[in-house]
Image (cartoon, rainbow, N blue to C red; front, side, top):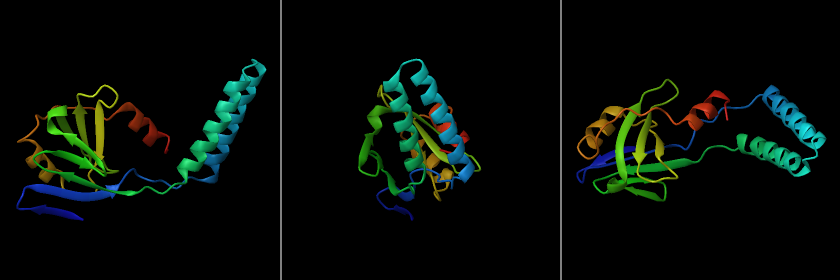
Length: 157
């Protein structure tokens, strides 16, 4: 769903992340690696860490099977709305659009300490519309994709 009305508002929806079906080999690798790490932690008498590794692997396996939610994104003169969260333009320093084969991403640099970069999947929204809208409000500055997002894509998480 892509709309732009007379109030200068862009609205679209996209999945919260790119979901990739995991093969049985992926789950076997996760199991072997996590059990090996847990055994190593147990040998070093760190039982709590061994339990944490097993719980983390189980949680990762459960999360990897979860289908992504469709999130509605909205940009207007006041800020950007990602689902129920609102980010005012006063707290956004700059933006960049990264075009990738897996899907275009809008990267926003925020003034917030704990969320310095906000990644927004563009889905079917043309990057030119986003660029035309944001270039009047926020300065464009080249940003790299956050490292954690790159790692998650690399390991198909």
